Image (cartoon, rainbow, N blue to C red; front, side, top):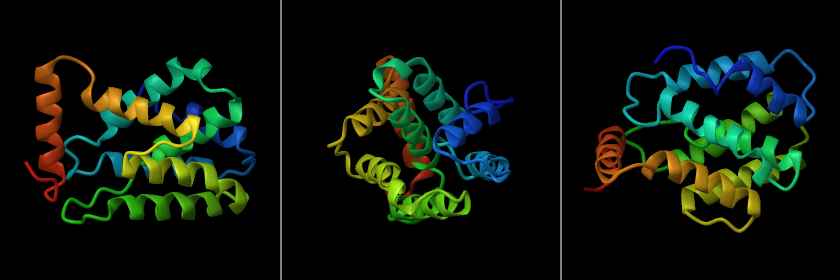
Length: 168
């Protein structure tokens, strides 16, 4: 994949600024995330996948009730598949912990991390009790299963190739 069009440093900075980050570390966080999505073991949850998620995040900003919800959703989207260990079944826990470590490194209030944590956890459990979580879930489902039947089948095969623990 060439340079992302939507999962960009500028969008990442907007998220960080919207959440109150005013230090230089957001650049490190962005580069760390991008390198994770470019890992060679990723057949589906790769840089193109996260870029498509961010395209929909950008296009549907008006669906979020508050700007802060939109920024939280962007943070949750960025981390919901940041850890991809194909042989492990607990990637979701690793994703929450990775996001939490970065949240703390960015100097954000731990109490406020509850919203992105909730979004990531609800994505992994296919539940969505909070309106922002439902919108994030809709974005992920649209990227994963949007399109025609053949595209859905192709994506399902790619997910199974990447995550060996997902049954056929």
